[in-house]
Length: 140
Length: 272
Image (cartoon, rainbow over all chains, first blue to last red; front, side, top):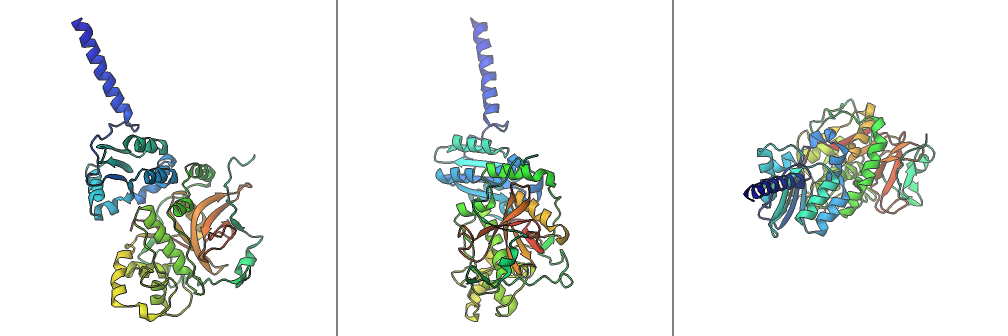
């Protein structure tokens, strides 16, 4: 019985890890704490405008789609799509969150979705429009 | 082989080799239409020499990728014209000024600000054109405008109306406001005129607006959408500065390649 319990615990642990890893969609753990403290709902994509040519069309869609902007507006998110220079020259909670992304050398474009009211958030790479929409749904 | 995808032109006016002559007349559909683009003096201001607009360094997107990319952008509803309309930004109306060269570049700047999520501030083309022309209602070209936008900046239209050619607006107060609405050194691309259509198409495929000028038209407007028609011809969806003009009354139209190949083009390379 004890052996059975240990197996269940181990399998359960693996299952939780697997769920957490896949839950990000981008292969990373969702950031549980809101990554942009100080604003009720905020969304930030940090990108490198000079490197835009090297983005995949799927990534570019996240930066250009009106579908995502509509969803963010409908759910009351303050949204910013900032080149790294905007982040470095900016002030306020969104810029500070972006500076942290740059300080941690995250691969750009990088996305932060923050819902301080609900205590939820996401921090991960920009990959696809469908992925971004899904993350907004999770955090909204 | 049939065309795999073609753009929905959304009833926009299409200008090409077959009908362009109608639009170079001073009176179009019963209304006098001002333009004002003075062909750039490439000897006085060679390609990439302005300091604010540097040669475009990024590789061009090959034509073989264009149709697929245009299809992807349409699928994501990611045309710049859609983003602009979503943000409630319409065309300028230059009325009886010869300041198209300011209207087009400044609209490009406004759209860049919008794309970054900045609050919309209505800016005045005349607040810059007047400083360049010494308050004369005469033409100019894109990098002339851009250089002043870099040097001093623009004034909000609330304090200097869009088309006001009047020294009374040039005060110490409005001069101080300009610093908030400047572009950085080297912050724009100067497009090589020898490959201006492919470069402009590359930029709009990446969601970057381009101020485009046409010597044949004596006009500078804004390119925002990549277009492919049912015959596989490429074009640019553009925004005019004639207020509610065009088939849809929203200032938009399509220029097909050939007539749509810019004589001069500048586009934002960096953020503001």
